[in-house]
Image (cartoon, rainbow, N blue to C red; front, side, top):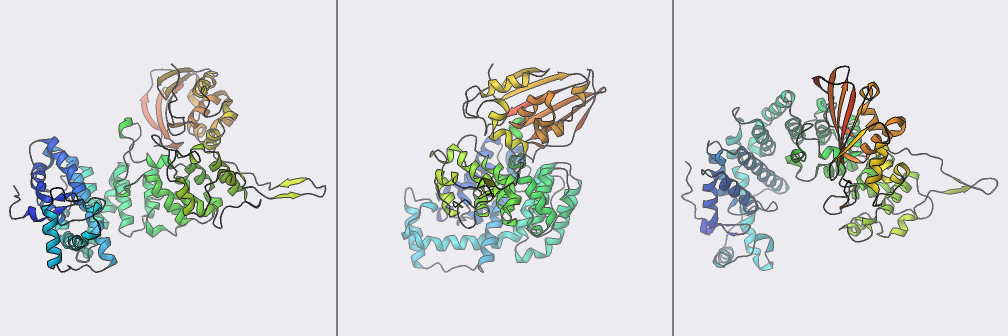
Length: 557
């Protein structure tokens, strides 16, 4: 067992104050109590890496966790603790490597002023947290600088503990170790290991069947400076999109097209890292390297790579529809500078794309009633007004013909079917989105066909139909193209457009199949389940989109 002797923790501090609490937390990592080990790890992150801040206590903690990384008792049998430590080591490596890239890091002198400040700081009953320091705490920043250098100098030792990645570790633990190596080899002393790390990522990504692992490894190739073109045509949305995000493919037209198409269904990318038909609690597994909601990375990247707003219109409209579940959010800010690079067009000379975008923005109530935070700042950052009436005035040119009659730009934009239904539900259901009878009307429209409808939850219901026609229904085309070409199942098509998740089960000629869709995109290929002990037919399970359905609205029954 690795000991914690030899370190004067009383002379160290972490982001929240004096470091005397750390020995007990570190000891708990390898204790017999799994809950205590989990609590210990959870408490380490905000102390030694709070908001990316490295402190004098960080390097000693890193030395300790590296020393126990291979101990069988680490985490008391909970593999996620070792995985969490590996990701923490990755982030510390990223922060120190980025800092060293900006300026060559060497230790600063710790003079009497700094030592006096440290004495005073450590004797306080409740010393202020690092992020609450005032101007008088300037001498302490010398110690923070030296903490970065100490951690940077430790990276080769960390790499030796991680590489080669043990084959006996569970698959996801190995994946987290691989994610750590992509940052560690940024250290100059480790550059010679880069080729081996790249080869490991490529070989492992090719053989794993798990989309989350594959996407993580492919994203890692991008971090290593590789252009992962072999994965741009992967059938899994998470994998091909992570390949396209690689900086080395910034000028690749195929990669750009992958990003544009993905950005048209941003929430599908959010939910693309788990296998189809997993329980709802596991659907939101994000790619660890992204750190934020995946669609935000996607939106920013596609806006960085594509200048032509005409190409981005459908993606921009989809971003406006990202409303948030628990509180309103606005995710479409990056598109504003592409749509209106010279400011809001209020003189009647806007393009049809600008007019469509402005109309949708003006129609979203929570952008103007104060319930969505940061909206005014978002518009200001793009040099645009936070004034609803001015956005409503964005119009295409009006030209008079020979008889002085107005003519308009005849360009016809055909938006994605899902977008049309969500933004004009009155045209498909006869009621507005905020109408109290919205979901009752939806069930009535769905029930108008020869189907059986059952409400299974507040925003979940199923539809069952039998017969040869039901068994032969092209489910993928129905969800992709909407109800227009499927009048007998018109209501089913509308329900699909208003759902975040659609699970489709089908029985045809004695065989059972299933496929799941998220935000209108297949979560995976059609699965053959085997022989069916029933006649032809289908069963859809619709989970209505909680971002689109007004808060508090529930299905009747």
